[in-house]
Length: 247
Image (tube, rainbow, N blue to C red):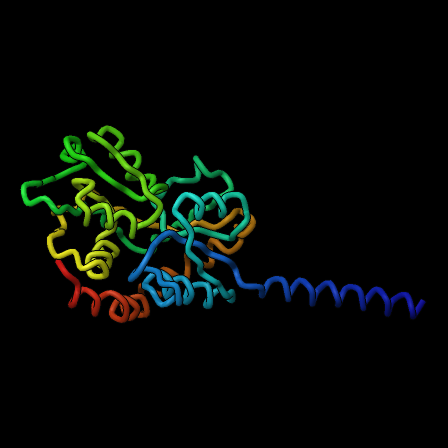
């Protein structure tokens, strides 16, 4: 009898330790966002915000980069653990994803052009032009479906390369990443068109198997915005960049 109890306790202890070991495995988050918002070395703005939020929740994360559509579908099918950053309400299209309800930040979708004659004020202003976007950006695919022509490319480098070669009138992308591409490709004749076509709250999505993490990450994102750490990350990653970016 004593040996049976000892054996049972051993098995329970093993399962407990195994479960603890599993719980400490890093979560794999993916994104299509590029520098300076997310970088390969995980030092971009969104990277540092999410790494800190998950650290406070007792979890480590690894961030990798995928094309926009694949990043989303991999998180939905459970190949990865989550995807960022996305507009609200994608749960209806991707039922295995849970939206973390505290936004990470606001995101400006802006148009860039090489043509000096183009002026726009809203989505409908883009209608007469040839437009290019990155494939998988749902808000852009929805709002630009009736333009003169719409080309969808794999990533931002191809997008701005099209603009550099004047193969499209306009590209629509995020403000910060657009500035980064202008700098990297030395596009001296490319300018941003104001005002932004849209400003949207952007969110993290987690696969539903991590539903218990959603309240914790929500709470820690809120606390980070209150205790000054969120602003410190902005100062570290975005403010210095804005001082030197081409506009």
